[in-house]
Image (cartoon, rainbow, N blue to C red; front, side, top):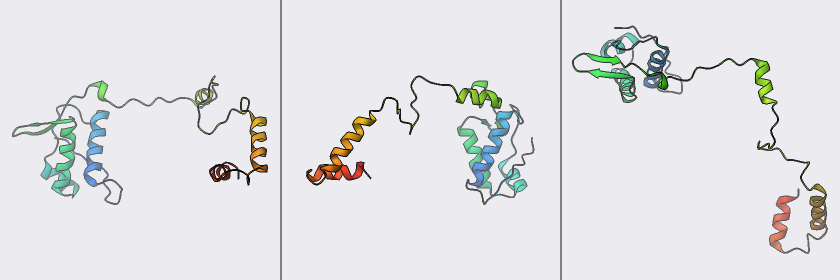
Length: 153
C-alpha cells in the first residue's frame, strides 16, 4: 500500500474530493503510482488526511468511473495499467526564437479577428457614401436614420 499526501485546501474553488481525485490521477499518469498498486482504504486515507470518508469515497468513485482504478472483491482498489494513448501529451519546450518565428509567419489570408485589410477596402467609396448620408440624413426615412446613427458616430 502507498502513502498519498496531497495538498488539500478547503478554501480553493474546487471541492476537496476533486482536489484529491486530481492529485491521484496525476500521480498515476506521471507513473509515481504504478499499475497494480493498492490504494489505501477509504477509512485509512480519510483518517490520514483528516477529511471525511465521503470525500475520499467520492474521489475514488471518480477514479473508478474514469478507469484509472479497478475494484477487486474483498481486496480494495488497485491502479490499472494505463495505455500511452490515454496519457496527457508531453509539453515540448520551444525556444523563444522558434516561437517568435512561428508567430511572425506570414499567411496569404489573415483570418485573425479585428484586422481590416486596408489595401483592398474601398475607403474612398465608403467616405463618399458617408458624406452623402450625412448631408441628407434629415431627408431619409426613419429606418435609415436609425441605421445611420449606429454606423456613424
